[in-house]
Length: 227
Image 1 (cartoon, rainbow, N blue to C red):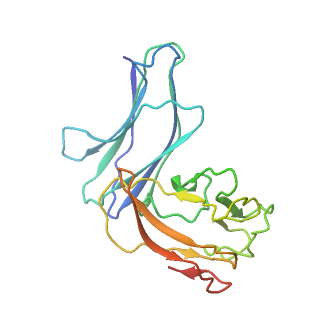
Image 2 (cartoon, one colour; image 1 turned 30 degrees about the vertical axis):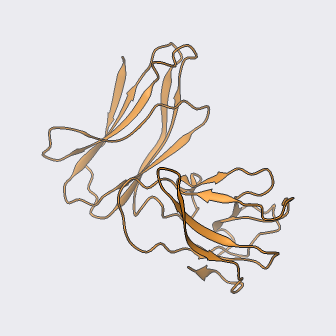
């Protein structure tokens, strides 16, 4: 099978970092048993082998985002991106962006188009949307975000304009964490007055089990509140 490898320059992560990959895999319609595969490895200095960080083979008709947490290390390392083509003349693998930033992948200020890998679980009646910046098409427009403290900043919001049933739920889901971590999860939020509106935070493990961490149903102030 044909393969191609991209090798980065020497890197070093003295703090936890997030490696984000924007990619697309396409396959030939007649070769489901031999799909293309995209592999991501790390090669540490003074080591003679590569460690597999992540792998994907699911085809899509749009760009996908993979977010990987890299633990801090004093060793220098290289990132290897390996594309392995499956059978068929139309199989392909494309990369749009590879980016490493300081901090956990779950950290986000929603100022970039990829939204740090956060995704909205689509609901016919109520969803999470991007607000702020040049987006001025919702009654939930806020005068300013928290990061830039201006109308140019972005944020995620839910409004009730299209709610048709009592207690409709909008879910915003973070990327899956890929490394053990501990610490304090904090965020800024605003909850406007409404009929039984509530805002909850859950964790979901690899088996799909949920655990509620925090919940509020009381609007506190017109400003951004820290949780």
